Length: 416
Image (cartoon, rainbow, N blue to C red; front, side, top):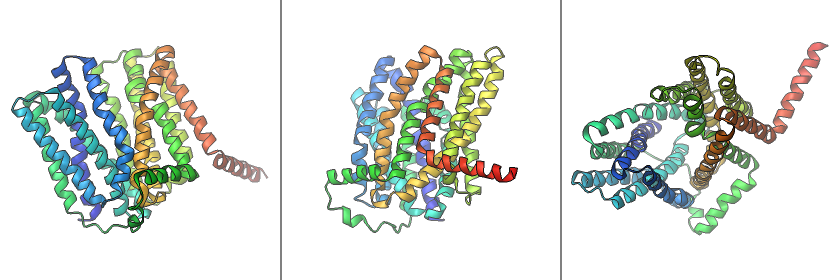
C-alpha cells in the first residue's frame, strides 16, 4: 500500500468521526440545557479558542514532523472521546466537562486538519497534486455522506455516550493507520526556521502572503467568496426553498445531497483527467460558479407562479452543477497553494487562511441574513454573486483582457 493510501484511509476514518459530532452534539446540548440561547452560547464559547489559536497552531506545527503531529492529534482526539464516553456512562453530565471537551476537540481537530494538509503535500509529487486532491475530495465526501444518519440513529437508540465511544474507536483506528506511513520528508529547510521566535515566524507568514501577488490574489478571492456565498447553506437556500416556496423541511436535505453528488462527480472527473491544467482556467471557473448561483436566484424569482416542486427539481439540478464546478475551483486553488507556498511555512499559511475564513464567514452570514430579510433570499443571492463576478473580473482583468483580444483577433482573421 502506498503512503498516500495510508493517509487517505486515516483521513476517511477521522472525517467520518468529525462529521458525526456536529450533528449529534447540538441535539444533546439542547436536551441538556432545554434552551436554544444556551445552546448557541455553548457553541460560540467552545469554537472561539480554536479560531483564536489557529495562527499560533500553524507556527507551532512547523517545529515537528507532520506525521507525528497528525498522529498526536488523532490519538488525542481518541483519548478525549474515550474519557468523555466514560464520564457520560457514569452519569457525569456536568456542563463544564462538556465545555472543556468541546473546546479541546475543536482545537485538536483544527491541528489535525492543518498538519494533514502539509503532510499531504509532503507525500504527493507536485505534478500529481490536482489528481490526488480530486481523489481526496471524493473520499472526504463519501466519508461524511452517511455520518449524520448513523450518528443520529445511534444517538436515538443507544444515547450520546455510545456515539462518543464510536468516535473514540474511529480515531484510534485512524491513529493506527497514520503510524504505518513510511515518511521521508521533502522539507529539508525546517532547521533554519527553528531558531526564529513565534513573532518572527508569524510576520514571515504575513509578509509572504502580502508580497506574493498571486498568493495574495487567491487569498483575497477566497475571502470574498466566503463573505458573499458561504452563507448559502445557512441563509439563502433555506430562505428560497422553505421560506419562499414553502417546501417541507423533510426534503430540504436533498439540496446538500445534490451538491455532494456534484462534488463526487467532479472529483472523479479531475482524477481521470489529471493532464488538464485546471489552474489555467481558474478565472473562468470562478465566474461560471457564480453564474450558476445567479441562475438559481433568477429561477426562484421567475418560477414563483409554477408548482414548488418544479422549481425544486430545477434547484437540485443546479446544485449538482454547482457542486461540480465548486470542486473544479477548489482543487486547483488548493493545489496551487500546496505547490507555491514553501513547505517550511505551509502550516502557518493554511492556519492564517483558516483563521481569516473563520472570521469572515460569520460576518458574511450576518450581512446576507439582514439583506435577505429586506429584499428576499433569491435577490440577495443574485446580488452577492454579481459582486463576486465583478471582483473576479477585477482580479483577473489582465488575463481576461488578453483572452478577449485573442478572441477578437481570431474573429477578425476568420472574417478575412
